[in-house]
Length: 331
Image (cartoon, rainbow, N blue to C red; front, side, top):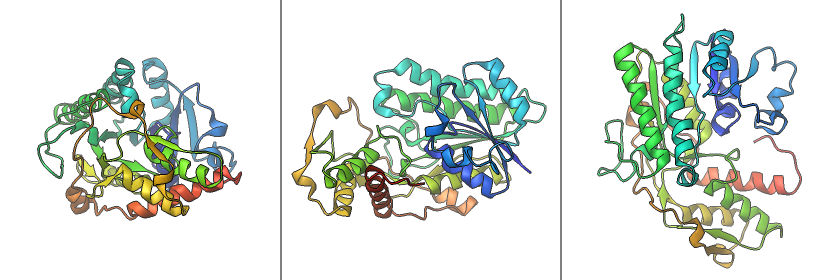
């Protein structure tokens, strides 16, 4: 039974990846912070299943900045593969807490690389990089060779971490993979992210629980895919014979307004009647033309996204309708 260790296991990607690895016959170990509320996490069903938790799924309390505790977890889990997904991942928030963003996202990755190369059995290592490392790229679309030009603290910290993985791969022989993840969403996305905010608002307005939706720049465009597809890419990248970096993306741009239009259409509402622009949600610097070229992932891993943008936003909005109506749903 292969063993995997996931940092950020209670997040959107971590929960989908956990389900995928369990289906593949893995023993999965996850790192959770002491403040995590497991009963309310995205792992609720698995955590409360006596046939899973304590048998093929194990959670360990640790902090990435506590090297002693984390080394203990590494020894206990003895993983064949590590998926490093943890970090401060909200771009807008990174302007308000730049130092802690760099600490949690950049330095934590370096600390983890130092720890794993000291292990008797050095595990394969996946690092969830981000399209934010490209910032305002000169070329369109972006691929694995596109220069880094981050325009926010989150992107800068991810660029540092991505470079460190490459350095440890080339210098110390660590099987380190950077998955350059373009935006990926799902019903499990945090409520402070714009896609979830829009889908939830559309559902709430339809149900009479909210009056309007305040947004920043709705012309901003992103390459949006579904998290289920992207975690499959993570796993495939560590099964390949050599350690490579990959862009995981759809190759198609959609605007925030497209999210709004699709979500409100799903509930048969006219967004123009409810959506207002609010300057408080405008970012100081907005990345431009971030759209990925997943050719390498398709060629080497046979990976490509299976869920369309419109199907994803419709799914997210329909799940929000059920949640707000008091139904229990397993996204």
